[in-house]
Length: 209
Image (cartoon, rainbow, N blue to C red; front, side, top):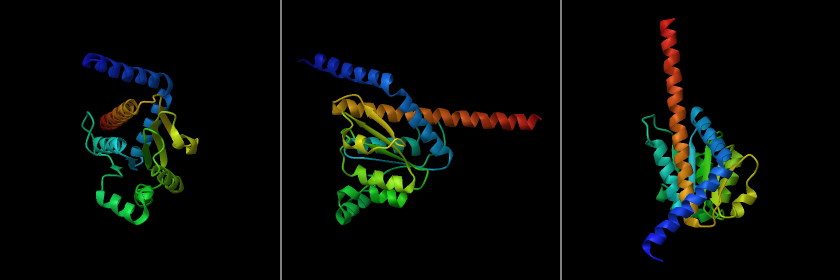
């Protein structure tokens, strides 16, 4: 297989996966985006976690929210739980690697916050304790996984938002995860811009009455 064939194959596989997402996951994407916007409206925060490439995705999303996506807006409260190497290594050393996210959710999470769990396989063992703590503390859970959903799909409840990417290829699952995160960034930007426009309109109407 030459380079052009590889390029064609990889891009087509990505297109096929995203077409399936459009057909099967649109409502869940909207629901999750609305939940994130409601969280922001209430002044709550977003916690994100994952391992490896999924950790990078969590950091990417948090950075887009604290910084910005496309438009100018206020900074938003978001944190990737692998950001602090001191916290991760201390917790792993003292409590075990399975607790590196759960301990942080316990210490940082509050009722009404959103916890986003990211895993391509659905089998990352350190996400399950974090999920349990999140439920006890009243956080809303959004889970991103892929393939057959893994063990995570089996323990999620009806209250959790589950987006399982319809692909068995790790790379295509990861590409799709970052696409969903970017979609939510766009939904956030649009929501905040519309709120600002409404406030400005109301203020203008009040001033002229």
